[in-house]
Length: 106
Image 1: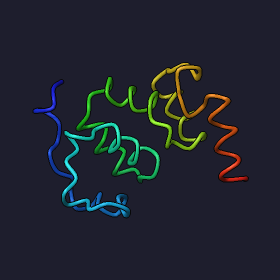
Image 2 (image 1 turned 120 degrees about the horizontal axis):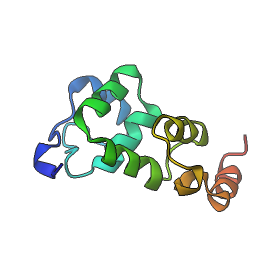
Image 3 (image 1 turned 180 degrees about the horizontal axis):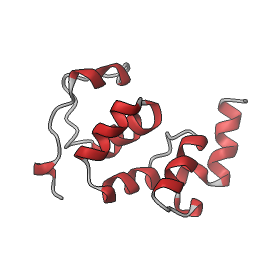
């Protein structure tokens, strides 16, 4: 799938999940990994459905593997859904988990 077939605009009901950016100007075809990450990690059921309808599975898997902003719990969930070995997911790597605990000691 090329960028021309990806959505070029976020629907209004998803703007809530992009509180730190101007969602009206965000083009999902230009930043697909960021959009997928944000919606799979912080979105609701409708957001997840939108992602799975509008992005190819390969791009979703790439986002889960590469994006370090996933919470560890969410990353494990998506690794099970898409059968991604945990060793291939950046946010689950030991050095990243240690750094995360230093920033968010929970």
